[in-house]
Length: 135
Image (tube, rainbow, N blue to C red; front, side, top):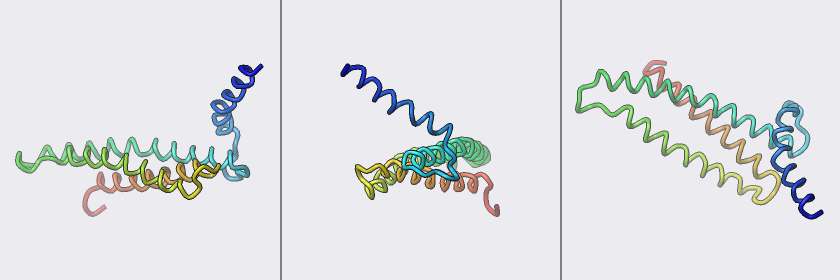
């Protein structure tokens, strides 16, 4: 009986977010679970938009490195290092942001929301980098 109960609880923990995300009207989220699911969806969407922006910026940096003299190349490596530094920055900054509701049911929502916001900002930065000066 104990194993059955534990199994049901674990199933609910791992299955319910996926089910909730499919059924929640994020324009009218009412419960904390719904709001957290919507914040997670926002972050996933922002992350999906970040990846092509990074690839486009990386292509622009390759192009830039292609016409620079040998001693001035480094655009690709600079962007790669910046992105590798930005990811832990985002994750750590958002973890700290979550401490406003540490241990509470709002904490994951705050973290997801923070990740969505910072990721959207980073996407805009990468798009500006891809556009070059004057864009």
